Length: 450
Ligand code: ADP
Image (tube, rainbow, N blue to C red; front, side):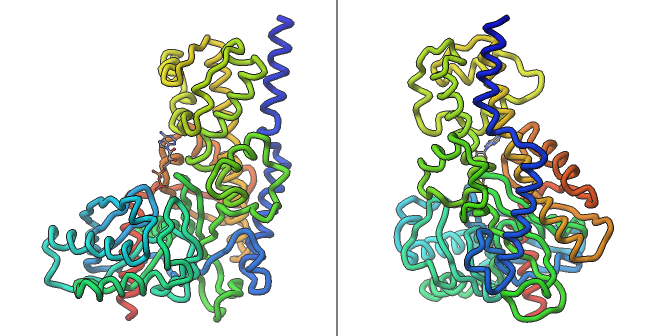
């Protein structure tokens, strides 16, 4: 019993820095709010860690959108080309996934956009859409400084892309230039949107209260409808505009340093962008498995796991997948399933080992969900104050595999959000094919106005 008590204390000591108090979360919420204000203000925008990028989307769908549209989705796991038919009866679509070879992701911009054009032309031929000129909406999930719905300067590549000659350029123009090179007249680029915006718009088609978009997948980001009078970086005071927060970078100015544990620092240092996307690295699918792996290694070192037997496999980067967290945390889990995962890692675990691994996973995913909630709390509270309401009813459109497949993430997120923003009544709506649908809906509005 003595040994057990000592073991418990040692485990708690390792995990303590990852367990956030209510006070910690309120601080994160307040800091996010501060960074949002700084990002929106023209004078302080350049030094804010959340960029609060204007999207030139000023309305969510009203259900009267109609027509046939092409949509592109670049920046998620796959590159897709879609045709989206928006009718009074609803939305139908067809799509193809195309591969972008690494050599093209990292080649020249011309090669990249020529390849994208080849995919579009192939798609239009397959779908027998060559005879008409279709308006096209482009979901482009990289940070852009937008100067209009169809003018977007790439600020920086992320997610393994590095095609030369694109940063600082207008992505819409690069696509139009490629179409010209191919003498392709079958499309007209009318809008470029971020995936968060696409998600919000797609969910907004089904639920008019949807004025927030959230992604928790490989990375994390959010957008929401802000009052134009608060957007200091765009002329005009009337109405609203959707703001792409780029909140993954929250904390890149050091304001969250007190939260980063030893494990987070090691994970950050092993990425291709150390010191960048700090908030994202505490939350999203690309990193949670790695954080768990770091903790497990320290626990082995301290002889708290596997009777201190060394496990060389655990030294391999990315060997512990974020989907393992989902499996391990599933309720009523049989020890056998954890065993199966451990077998992959060439480890042999006792019942105690398994339950400790589960506690580690729970701690890491709980913290991720709570931090995400603290960010969202700042957003909904700002919207409520903007509108002078005692109580705000709002829907968040959500996409991303971590949010959708993890057994506890969404529940923990929603519970923490209720706690931090009690005056807001927030619903969550899962987006299906949001980026394609959303881009088409933005294109529909733009096309109607044009
Ligand atoms: P993207 O954000 O690039 O569009 P996804 O939304 O598909 O991509 O998210 C991919 C991320 O989801 C990966 O980082 C992966 O680790 C994580 N993931 C995949 N399966 C699961 C799962 N079952 N539970 C939790 N996370 C998962």
